[in-house]
Image: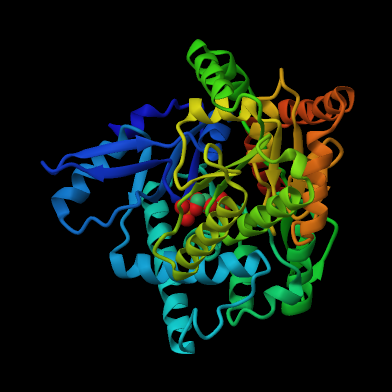
Length: 489
Ligand code: G6P
């Protein structure tokens, strides 16, 4: 009966990601409440109109009883989602361990865990085993849903074994894999004990996508240097089998933000915030509280700016929204303490009886509040030390149609390659450079701000998430057609 949802004429797209676009919370009476996330991937896939999309992923909760699993599966089916159930031990070893303590830092050039982050090589091995086991569970879920002719799109560093497992099961399955993080230099990737297995598993896909050309180039170099395969302008070739590798820079659903800013309730919030910060310029940071976002570096640069510019004391505020994330991983707990310590020190040093220079919030904001905040901001400050793309910079630009504020953007974010001409690019490690960029942005004449904003606005509104998803999926389809043609020639 569930299958009837799909119109016969439409091809089906199975999207497999670690997280579903819905998180499940169990009520006291045992029933399920589903929170739908309005994340980038969800809105991107709404734009892929020629396919019927179904999601397969982890619902973010451990459910051990059969009744709970059955009821959650039914509740999710109404949202076209299929849950993969992971028990607590797997979540600890696969998600907190191998994904977020090993692959995530490595892919962002933070290296492999030191002694204090990983006690023994045995635990490395057990995390790797759990990673493979979890990937197997995702593969089994795909297998159960798959029908001939479906296209399967695997997402991110959590699922690098998935293309291999799926192709072993059915070599005709159309499989694409997209990485949402950077792929590091081959010299960094080669430090990973399981470097070859991961590369070979990804290469089983028909199409492998990255946000930037550089990430794709690093991946191809890793395959040539570590596996000894041949890199071609199209991708990587292994004994006559070509895996196409290409760049597909993601965007946002810009219309959603542009329209939201015009809503009466958002306009009310804008007025309220403007009143709250009257007489002060607003510098804004919106980040998950993650090592890669360079939040300590941002606070230190702001401190230096205040130190060097006493005339700005009391006339500027840094609003930092730091969304808690992966809170069970010790490295993230340490970061949280470090950031609080730095912010407390700066506020103690430059605060007055009535104002503090940094408003730091450990929480996320609802969509409308976020849009209002973007709209009243004078300067957005993105200091990622590495970042696959950074869509906060895109969201800020989309909400600035009337204010035309300045974007200060780390050159280590993928977005620097698309918004570089309109933003002030900085090296977040260079505290003095960031501090002087803050001054430059706050003092920038209106005509220059307008010119820069116009450049970025044009890009953000013409390179949308919908277009990104449609391009990847259509290229995945074509790649297969090409491969089949080659086989029949
Ligand atoms: C990054 C990853 C995503 C991930 C998100 C949130 O953007 O590329 O795959 O979903 O962070 O992290 P979390 O661990 O909460 O899913």
